[in-house]
Image (cartoon, rainbow, N blue to C red):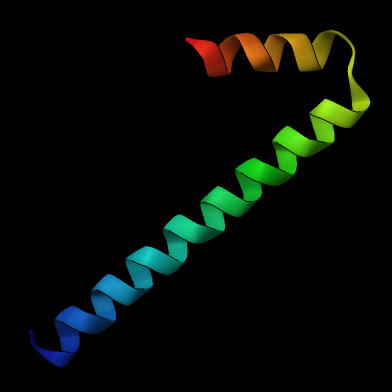
Length: 47
C-alpha cells in the first residue's frame, strides 16, 4: 500500500469511529431519558 492509501484508510476509520461514538452517545442519552423518544428510537434500531 502507498502512504496515501494508508492515510485514506486511516481517515475513513477515524470517521467511522467518530460516527459510532456519536451514535452510542445518542443511544445512551435516550436510554437514560426514557419516554416516547426512547421507544421510537428503539423501534428504528430494530427495523
